[in-house]
View (tube, rainbow, N blue to C red):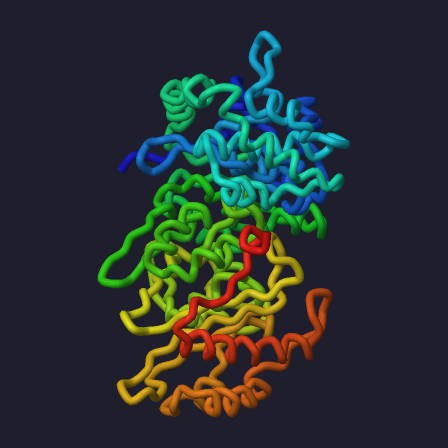
Length: 494
């Protein structure tokens, strides 16, 4: 066995420059480093919570297949420790050496896409990321790419016009990030020497494991360490709550946690797979999960956040756990070399408490695909449709017998209890009964036995209780109608 090599510096590429940092705090954000230490002030701080997009930069990373993908991320909640082996691109890198603006920038100028200008660099970087992948995007693709960018001057329409015109200013074949891709892949591969990165001493340490087995060893030796994958939650612990998260283990670069496989009707997703990476497979096999993932944060959050992290942190308002519980998903947990598998619903014990031993981590989630004839739906209730945190979320999976009675029903909610939780009393009232409105109305009265929701800034307890009942009624109406469920989009409304 090859001896483990330990490296005492982070290595990544900033725009065109090789960076090696040997003095990095575990909670140092990319935004602060860019502005304070590199004087790259086109990247702005607006919300410091990954919500407004003013801090958007592109991060290029190698894929398991050996390719290179660039994605927009929120620099305000992205930690430097997660960038080892990556290429960071800021707005300052877009203009040509002779001062000519990039096609994205020129389109924004010509179509008056900037008003006060504060948010403009973030919009430019989000549009750049979209344009590289989709040079001639649809209106819906543009709006999806800009979900995580907010404009305080309400200047969205000029920005949309600019987005549609980018390719008229130049083709992607002339873009440096695309033209020099093979060179950049070689440079990024040259940064990796299969070493573990350790910076700092004692408790105040930053660790980037050399691989999955090394991660298991590191966490077993330091079970109180904070594990950071996408930092869409942990980032706010630092920027909003000023928490000390040291020591920190960064796992975003572990390719072994990036696998997606479909075997015998079960989708297995590695804990490090981001929402953006998972959405295609999930949408193909379980179409109802696609629209749910598309409403998780903005595109930057989906590029960073992981399904494993959404589960592991145990939040009662995490978006994926209720849906996965309704689908009877299970988890593989690992400690050292020992693995065990449990049902996802058993993982959540109480608020802030999960069935995870010290030094143990979520390695993969296994999601059964509904059988032919089964009905499945997920409904997310929020104050605004896009980029908002759940008030309540209901997920439903139903199998009917030949005589129209309920053969199997699984119902789970987020935002209704201290953990994501099944509606066991409601399920019991439905099981074996005819799937009709009378049965559903009777079962709705059982919600009070399953849940005692709280009042907070997102919704009152009374609203949550009523909404939960109505979501069951909605599920019944949609499963007994031949009409397509009503989903009014801004395009249809116009």
